[in-house]
Length: 259
Figure (cartoon, rainbow, N blue to C red):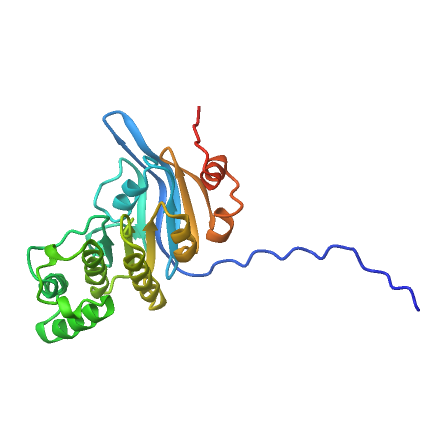
C-alpha cells in the first residue's frame, strides 16, 4: 500500500466578511452625567438595519439608561447620536418605538390603546380598524379587544404594548426587559412577536438579563459594565467565549468588581 502523507499546513484563515448593511443608529463618545456622577462614558455603537442587538450587563451597568438615550427620551451630556447619518431629532424618533419593562397603557380598552397610537401616527380610521384587528390577532388578544387594558394579566399587557408599538411600523424597536417576571408561555409569545417583527425588517435593540433569551434573540451583544462598553461581538461568541473579564465573570456566575 502506498504511504499517504497528510498535508498539515494550515489553510489561511478566512477574512471576516464585512457587514454592508446600512448603519441605522450610531453613537460617538456618548455619555451621561448627573449630580457629578458619570453614569455612562464613551459609548461608541453602530446598530445596523435589520439587526437584533442585545444589551446586557449587571444591575446598575447603565443598560436602561442607554436605551432611553438612544430613543431620545433623555438628552446626553456628552457625545452624539446619529440616525442615518444625521443627528437624532424628533423626526427620527417618529421612526422608532419603545416597549418598557412595565407597560404604559391608557385607561381604555385594548383596542382603544391600539387605536390611539395609530391615530397619533396619522392613520385614518378605515386603516386603523384593519391594523387593530391584525395586531390583536398577532398577540392572541382578539377575544380581549374590548376589555380594559389595565385589568389584563401582566403577560397580556406586555403583548398588547408590544403589538401597539409594532402597529406603528417603526424602523427600530427598543425593548427594555420586556419579559421580566413573565411566565414561560408569555415570554415565548413576546419573543415570537419580536422575531416575526425582525423577519419583516424591523431592527431590534433589546435589554435583557436572561442569557437564554439573549441567545435566542440576539445576533449581536453589547456588554456593559460600570457605564462603559466592556465588550461587543456576535451573540454566539460573547455568550460562550467572552474576551473581557466582566463578561467572563457574568458567564461563570462570579461577582465582578473593578477594584
